[in-house]
Image (cartoon, rainbow, N blue to C red):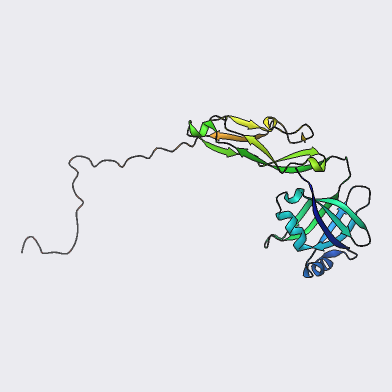
Length: 218
């Protein structure tokens, strides 16, 4: 479950706007942020890239609950809501953070992890395919699971595991369409390879043409 980490990230208010201001912040190792939700209005801030990146690399990743202390605006518990990455470097360049309110449910995305080896693989010679890797759920922040595990050991060839088959706690509501397929066992059919045609009986060797001695002297 997502738990409040003993992490406090200190941030500064962002007074400037536009791309030039964002570049100046990034040159100082800061990431522009927008904090919204909860009991306050939207706040523009900037926080150290290294600290935010460490949170995203943690086991709970973007579902980590941490404290953001913005100088002049106060501290609040937050989670990542959206983030923008540099397409070349893969580095965080902007993030939206959501304030959390005790008792208020939120919608988040969590990974689906498949456990076990399907009978359709061990006995049917099939291949397990994961068709859906994330699902949307609604729950209290502290009830967010690190992942939703699904046992696929009983899955046969051509059978489907649907979102409705996922087992979650009573405090968790799955928002994703229950009819969405999560996994299946498919069979890879190999195309038959035609054998090369045998040489027809009596087929002569190809004529070799080249320079040589004349068979008949004139």
